[in-house]
Image 1 (cartoon, rainbow, N blue to C red):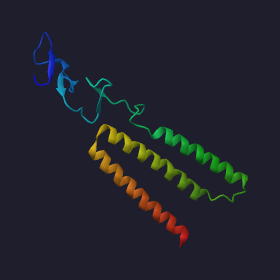
Image 2 (cartoon, rainbow, N blue to C red):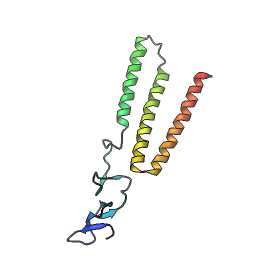
Image 3 (cartoon, one colour):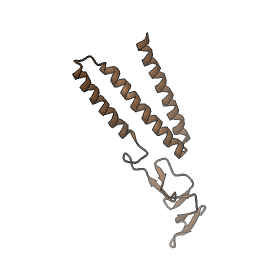
Length: 141
């Protein structure tokens, strides 16, 4: 079997250890794991991604930070006797959270060399910048 360093004693079609640079999945060796899998830390096995607690899925810290900022804005709104621009504050805070998430995911995509994800993330970042430009323009004009 191609890429197999050691086959099963009971079945030669079943691989149990792969060559260097290859990963084992379902008794076969592959160079790259399927999208729903990731290589183990030593790179010898394809492991199923564990969402949502997998470190590849990270909107949670950004979402929590956004919720904290929303609560602070609501407190400010009450303390200033409703003079705070609450809707605009929420939009700006959500935008920062969204940008942080996109940038983090872009860095992860570069590390894992996922070209399709890199392209879609860059497009989402560009679309966000265009929308922010329109948002700023509404305050200027």
